Every structure is written in C-alpha cells, then in structure tokens.
Length: 137
Image 1 (spheres, rainbow, N blue to C red):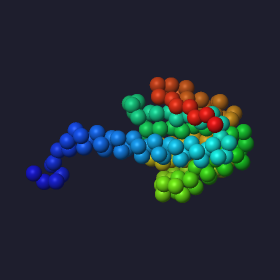
Image 2: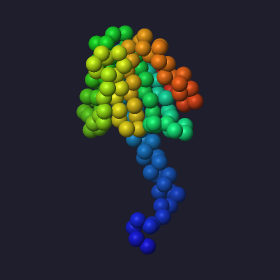
Image 3: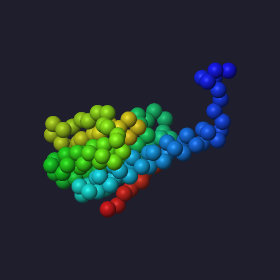
C-alpha cells in the first residue's frame, strides 16, 4: 500500500479538524482586532461552514460612516494579516468608490461597507441560516 493509499485514523482526522479550527479562530481574531483599531461598527462573523453551497466558511461583515474609513479598515485588515500571520490577500475589490470593499482570503471573505450600503444589501439576512457571532467594541 503506497503512501497515497494509507488510511487516516479518526484521531488524526480530528487533530487536523481541530488545527484548522484553531487557525480559523486566529485569523478571525486578527481580522476583528484590525477592524476595531479603525473604529469599525457592528462586526459580525457569519459562519457558513455548515451550509450547503456556501462559497466560503466565513463572511466577516462591518461598516463605517465614510468611504475614507471604509478604505482605512480594509487597508488595516490587509496590513495586519500580513504583519501578524504572513497571510496575503487573494483578491480585493471595491476600491474604486470604497462603498463596499471585499477582501478575499479564500475561506474567509471580509466585507467592509459604508453604512447605508450595508443596510441596503443586508447580507446578514441573505445568509440567515448561518451561525452568527457579534463582536462588540
């Protein structure tokens, strides 16, 4: 039996899942702390990992009252992810007008809205089946 054909024991599988969860928690903490440093409002983590057909495991959503603050929050998240974890952004969109900036980290998507656009798009309601964690200041 080659290395490729070897079975993974349930204990090793659980260890791998726990490591992935610990890594996700660390990444989420860095993102939330970076947002709070720039006075982000109403930070939510929508855990989509148990939903069928979800495009990622987590949506982190926040808002700010100006486009300048939206850009500052997004920039700080990107900077802190590189600085503290060495994780680089895969894709970034929305910088043209900074009404809604999206940071794509693969299994974690960060959405930074200007307040009125968050109210309009209501991502929390679109993914109402997700497990939601709120981060207070």
